[in-house]
Amino acid sequence: MSASLHLAGASDLDRLEPMVAAYHALEGICSDADDRRAALEPLLEGTPLGCVYLIGPRRAPVGYIAISFGWSIEFGGMDGFIDEFFIRENVRGRGMGGEVLARLLPELDGAGVRALHLEMDVRRTRLERLYAKAGFRMRDGYHLMTRAARRPSRT
Image 1 (tube, rainbow, N blue to C red):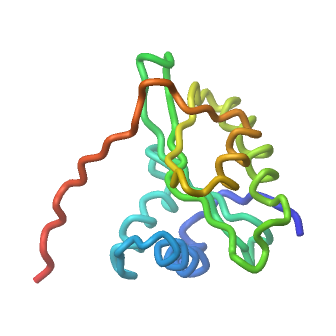
Image 2: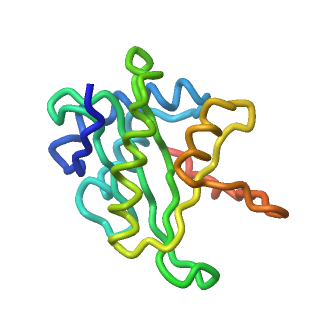
């Protein structure tokens, strides 16, 4: 199976949302369909703040990778963050993740992304090897810290 990449658009929402739900379940992320759709819609409608690529055949994707964009004075321009990277369980372990990164990273470099960051569970050594092979390195003396805004309650 090829790790072809397709920039996702609004018409891909119904194919994408169930994979995001599966990824969230795998990672223990509490979300519901409405929250996921609300987070995905701007990315699929062309916001400059990020994008989502479908992995595999466009009509029957086997995964996705979501990138958010920001700006870094330290790195001299636009930077990105791999927000989510998911490949369906039944096709994992076939080298597809490495293939996705090999195709995507030069594209992001060509678009002016000066640095790409990611967060991963330190217990997932297989993922660490995948990312290291693609050129990602731990930064000595740095740890990602997060403050999540409180979500307004729904009435």
